Amino acid sequence: MAERGELRLERWNMLSNELKVATEIEAIGEVGEIPYFNKIADSLSKKGMKKTAVHGAVNRLIDLGTIDAKWEQLNNHSWVRRLYLYGETKDFVQGLNKTLYR
Image (cartoon, rainbow, N blue to C red):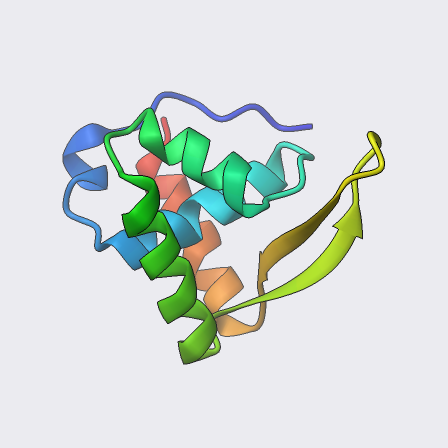
C-alpha cells in the first residue's frame, strides 16, 4: 500500500467539490482501502467539507458518468457501495493527486 504525503492546501482549496471527491476516491483506493461514501465523507470532513456537499458532489459525478458504484461486502459483513473512477477520468485524477500530495 502506498502512503499519501502531505496535502498541499493552496492547491486543494482551488478545486471544486466534485474534484475534491474524485481525488479522495482515488487517494483512498491507492492506499488499498475501499472508497465508499462514509469513508470519503469522514475523510473530507477533516478537510472542511460537509457531508451534504460530498453527497451532492457524488451524485453529480455519477450523473456525469465520471464515477460509478458497485456493491461490495466488507470484512464485518456489512455492504457498501464502492465508488470508483474509470477511463480518462481515472488518469486525470491520478495526475491531479500527484500534484496535490507531496
